[in-house]
Every structure is written in structure tokens, then in C-alpha cells.
Image 1 (tube, rainbow, N blue to C red):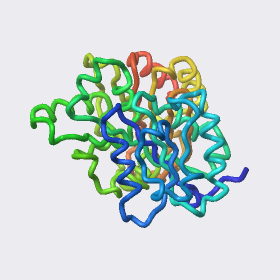
Image 2: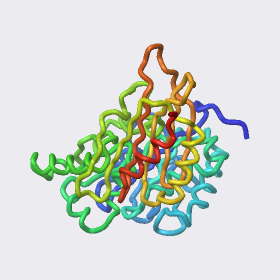
Image 3: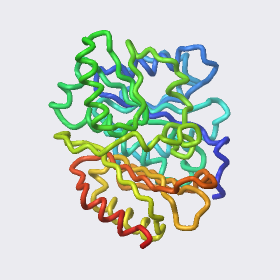
Image 4: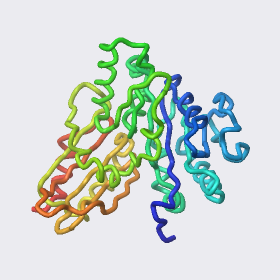
Length: 326
């Protein structure tokens, strides 16, 4: 299939967050505000949502419940089928919202937009938006891995219920979030109240688009070697990258360790290439494309970022260095 121009692709926003964090409140706000746009909605626990059907286009057809209570690999086919059905009447809505359950790993949802060529051509993953409960987040980290993983996958984070904690508590929660994922944009909210323009149709998942208006996006993070099980690691180099070696190494790495690597992304300086090489990965799925041109006289450096669990920083750095031109 010929690639579809990005302007014709329907933006998809994935809403995730721990149980009770406020993502259903956010979803209802998106559907009820007078923003002039219409959204098709795919949810898990539709019976518990309390969404006003009249707010959704052709509600009987456009609100979908996944077959089981958790969006995961077993229902990725359902998600593809639903999206393909929606594309037959794409003129009736401006975007798609996917709400995962409070205990869901958003990774398989994001991977859907890497794996199916038809879905990839006709939709674009615009952002993974994670709602965090400021009052209970630190406790949730001790109960299991879900809350931590949802933060690790996020492009945009709503640090919600800020009115229920002290400034010191809020600072501690924000520090923990930043330690897990320093690359997500954080918005502090009460009752999920936010200017929807800050989270919808922002291209937050699209590194090429981010770099157009935020060229230093990947430069403000740093290595985290704290006690966090989930952490971020960044690798930089001023030597040009051999693309064949990089693809081979990254493919092997993700097949072997992709379960622990939630997000990987990078801007690479390919030897002799006039444009940046933009790489994006979710678990074992990866995608890459040419980005904006290097400016004349601009320093050409590469930066690779990993967010995941049990990252072996020395091993990752050695692997990346093997991809560099001598």
C-alpha cells in the first residue's frame, strides 16, 4: 500500500493511568467540552465508564469495548479490526481515543500502530497520555509495576489531584516521575482539568514533529542510576552511525530484551546523510525514518534514549559504540 500523507492520517490518543487516577474524568471532559471536534472511543470497561453516549458520534457503533478486561497482546487483533472498521467512516470523526484499564500496560496498544501496515498508513499514534494520582502514586509504586510502567510509556503526564497533597509531597511525586521518565511533559491538574490543546493533536509521540519546535527534546535527560527499578538511560556520541549495524544491533537487542525496554528513541547522525535519522521503539517493535536536515555548520551528534527495567547501561553503551564509524 502506498503511504498515506500524514495530513490524512487520523490521530489516536491513548489514555492510561492507574485505577482512580482520573482518566475517565479526563475522557468525559474531552467528549463534553465545546472544542468542535468529534472522537470515536475505544474502551475496556465500558459499563463502568459513565460516558454520555450522545457525546460520541454514532455512539452505538463508535464506542467499542474490548473483548476482555485488559488491552494486551491477545486483543491486539480486536483493536486492529475496530480501527479498520472506523476507517470506513473516518469522515465522521476527527480523532480516536483509546482508554486502557487501570491495570493495563499501554505498550501493546502502542505497538499496534507499528505492526499493521493498513493501520499505520491510515492512523498516527499522537500521544500516550498517562494520568497520575498525586496522592496515591508513591503507594501504588509499592503495590506492583503497573503505575511505574504507565509513567515509563508516557509522552504526556497529567499529575492529577494536586489539591490533595502538600507542596512538599507534590515535589516528591514529581521527582519520582522525572526519575522514571525525564522526557514526558508534565502538567499539574485538579480533577483532570487541562486545556485539551495541551494533550490532543500535539504529535507528542512523533519525534520528527517534536524536534521541529523543540530541537533539544532529547538533551535535557540524564542517566539515572538510582534505586528505581524502572529508569531512563541516555547515550550520546559525536561519531557518525553506521545504519546497517544500528538496525541489526537494535533488532537483536529488542528481540532479546524488548520486554524490559518500554520505550526507546533516538536522533542519529548517519555517516554522510544530510538529514537526521529518527528512531522510535515500543517494547520489541521499532520504526525509523528521516527527519529534518542538519543545518550548515551544525554539530552532528547522536543521542539514544532507553526507558525500561533492569537496563544494563555498560552493555547498551558498548552495543551502540559498535554501531559507530571508526
